[in-house]
Image 1 (cartoon, rainbow over the protein chains, first blue to last red):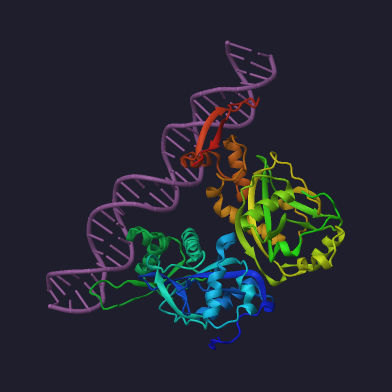
Image 2: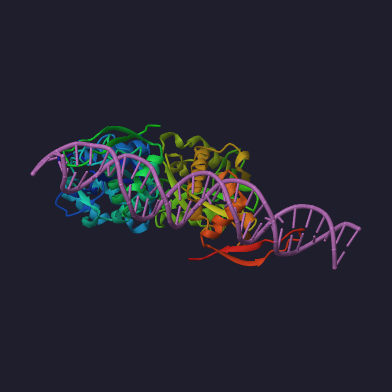
Length: 240
Length: 240
DNA sequence: TGTTATTGTAACATATTGTTACAATAATAC
DNA sequence: GTATTATTGTAACAATATGTTACAATAACA
């Protein structure tokens, strides 16, 4: 990671022009669902963690590495969900402001002011297990609840909406591979995850039976929290 | 459409570099499922209908117009499903050959030999209701059964596979908007469509009940085909 | 040894899907 | 007309899956 504010930004000749990526990183801690948002230096601009694709790396590698560099989070399982290519999606004024506030030469980075098409990815992680670190362009990187998001730049709010739709459609299939929950978790935590993501509540008994019927959970020892009640079992996902 | 073989190809300054699109157009006639494949002039190269994005048009418009120009098919409902960005997906030798065989100057079209990321779309239509016309770069445009596809250039076979997977996951949701079947169709035709796309068979009675239970079908008059048996009703999709 | 809160499951009701059976035809042959 | 044939529409029952209610099995603590 680069921490020198006045160092050179991305060089035109190293990157594919017109191509960007953005990521919607959902974080969950057993109770709350949030997403990760960057705030750019002295601009008041909020954005999803994103970046560009180097000429000599695959799209997938660019996204994995790029998100890691911008957030400090490693081993994210990122899933591509849509590519955004409207004419009005790119805001060169915002980009110019970001360059300016970071002491980057506009002329040398003119290619960044051109039109970009963005390939969007999402990830689900347990936000208590990671410690996001903003990169040199950003002032801060913070977890925001979906109902308390700051206004996001360009079409990033639309990207978040589309990510949510996609994740809701694929939750049953995708939850296993994602690191949304700790390795071992209780049925209540799993249900909380489902409820926060789907935006609806489920009956405890039916939910428990449905999950156990999938045969994708392994039951472990009980978890003694100190509460005056029967202790819940811990579960983990079967790796298949 | 341009039919002059020696006319100028796409001009670098009009297009976004590094960005392409490809389409998997599924055709169905009540019995068979096929996809549309182009063969390039004197190259023996087979490819999905694709193209590039102009600087002043949205990705969606580029795809809609581009597919129309390459196939002659209008009013396609195209659905984006994945963006392909591996390093080895682009084959500049193949592109060079296509330019050469079409009498296009390599130097003037050098930008086409560079790396491209491709956004892929699929469509479902009734192939008896359209008459595909190859554009000036292609020798022919033909419907091919999935099990009789010619070897496709670059990563186009992977693109077809991914399209099939996507369509199978979303058939219930997407069949309405797609023009896969004629406006009015019998339950048997609908079942055939499902079976060909899903690659499995369904029990007639359960299928019929399930479809009627969706409440998205309107029943019309009976269809008298001349067969010595009870005539089936015709149905159409409810527009909602 | 009660009391309390929460979890795991059984039991039953309801809804969905799978399977079998059969009546209702269109066309045709007689 | 009447019998024959192939196919369609639906009912009836069985097997699964899901929704709902009830209740016993606990951990911790008073």
